[in-house]
Amino acid sequence: MKINGVPYRTIWLNDDGWSITVIDQTKLPHRFETKELKSAEDCAEAIRTMTVRGAPLIGATAAYGFAMALRDDASDEALEAACKMLGETRPTAINLRWALNEMASAVRNRPREERVAAAYKRAAVLCDEDVETCRRIGENGLKLIEQAAATKEKGETVNILTHCNAGWIACVDWGTALAPIYMAHDKGIPVHVWVDETRPRNQGASLTAFELGAHGVPHTIIADNAGGHLMQAGEVDLCIVGTDRVTANGDVANKIGTYLKALAAKDNGVPFHVALPYSTIDWTMKKGVGMIPIEERSPDELLKMTGRLPDGSLATVEIAAPGSPAANPGFDVTPARLVSGFITERGLCHASEAGLLTLYPEHKPK
Ligand code: MRU
Image 1 (tube, helix red, strand yellow):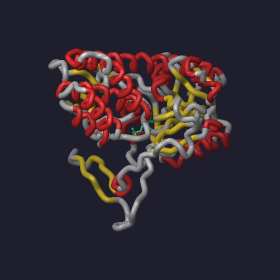
Image 2: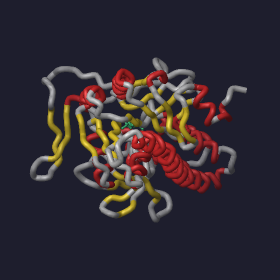
Image 3: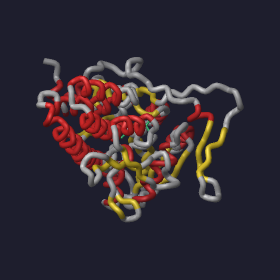
C-alpha cells in the first residue's frame, strides 16, 4: 500500500542482506518512522513493545529474527533457543508460533553451513506469501461487500464496522479484514468504515484510521462503546474483523472488545465476518473459549495515554485516578456461533470445524 504515493511493505530486508527495517507503529499516526532491527533480540523487543504488531506481521518479524539468530550460531541448540525466545514475546497470536515452526522446519535437516541462507530464503518467501494470501482474502471478502451493495439503492454507501487494526500495517501488505474494503473502494463501490478506537492502545484510532485515510477510504472513528447503538440504528451493514487465532471448532481470538461487537451484531441481525489467513488456524486446539492463552498487558496502557501536543511533540499523560489498579486482558474469544463466516485465502466458509475443513480438507482427522 502507499504512503504519500510511495509503495511500502511493513517489513523489508536491508541492502546488507541480513538486517531488516520495519515501520515503527508506536509512533503512528503522528510520525512515520522506520526502525532497523539487527539481531534476534531486536526483533523480539520490537514484537514485545508493539513496534510491530498484528498477527501476520509478528510472525514475519520473528522469522527474520530467527534467521538473525542463526547468523550468530547455527547449532541445533541455538535454533531451539531462538524459537523459544522469539515465541515467548506474545502468547495469543498463533501466527508467531506457526512462523517459527516453518523456519525451524526449513533449516533443521540441513548442514550448519547452509542454515543461514536457507533461513533468510524462507523468511522472504513467508513475507511474499503473506502478501499474496492477504490479496486473495481481499478478493474473497469483496464478494460479501458486493452482495451488501447489491441490496442497496445504486450509489448508496455500504457501512462496515471493524475493530482494532487488521489492515496492511498488521500484515506485510493488504491486510486481512481491510483487504476486501480496499478492493471494494478501488472498484468504485461506495464504502464507509466505522473504526472502533480500540482501547486501550487505540489501534483503531491510530492505525486503522491512518491507513484508511492514506488510501482515501471514507471512515469515522467511534468510541468502542458506540458499535451496538449504531447497529441498532441500522447504520452498520456488516462487521469485518481480523483474528489472532481461530481454533479447530471456529472460535475466534481477537483484540479485546471483539466479543461484545459480535454479541451486538447477533442481536441486531448484522453479519459478523472474520478474515484470516491459514496461518492463523490452530488445528491443535479443539476450542478457543477458556483455552486460548490471553495476553495480560501492562496496566499502564489503560492508566496513561500518549498523544501529540500542539507544538508537535509527543507526550504521555496519566488519565486515571492515581493509585487505582487496572487490569488489561489484551484479547477475548468470540464463540463460533456468533460468527457469520470466515473469509480466507481459499474462499468463504461457515465458522465451524466442518466449514473450515471444506476449505482445508488436508486437516481432516485421519
Ligand atoms: O495486540 P495487537 O495489536 O497485535 O492485536 C492485533 C489484533 O487484534 C488484530 O486485529 C489481529 O492481529 C488481526 S491482524 C491481521
